[in-house]
Amino acid sequence: MKFWNAMGHSLFSEDESARKTVWILRVVFFFYLLALMKVIVFKYPLSELAQITSSWTKEVILEGLDTANFTLFKTIDMYIRYWGRLNSFENLFGNIFCFVPFGFLLPFLHRGSRKGPVLLLDSFLLVCSIEIFQLITNFGAFDVDDILLNCVGSMGGYCLFAFCFSRWERGRKK
Image (cartoon, rainbow, N blue to C red; front, side, top):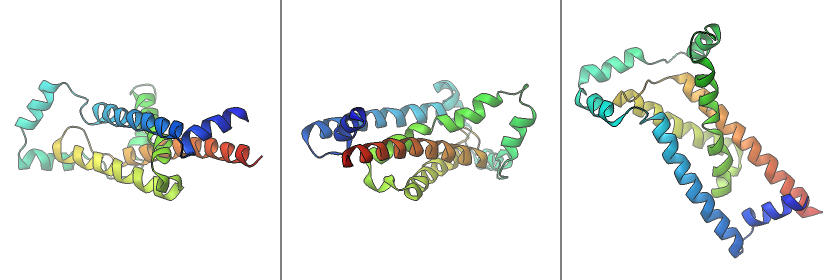
């Protein structure tokens, strides 16, 4: 219990040590978001991104609509059916795990996100923004299954946060 009390104090109190801890978490969260954008949006080499931007025309953008997946579970089903032939594990679990830190860190930094529905909405808006950006720019492919998997990852991180927060609350009351 002492661990949870110490951790909770440094994260949820209003004293100087808590402010330092929150500042560190903000920096970590900022770099996490940068890494997330690099992995998801700007995953191609700079020369390839420049080539993509030079080919932007109305037709190319409309072509992105043709390759987009708007059918829920279509990609997930494909990865499960062809488990041994595609990079299924990386795509399925990568889409989940890359958003676990979002669901874990944001509630520490934003009190409103300590409520599950609010965090889910935050996750949904961020992921939809990324997917729409990919759809418009062709820096990736729009996939509704990515939205689902990313939100599942965020909620997994939120469950981890809720567990830590509840342990701290119980320790504080004793």
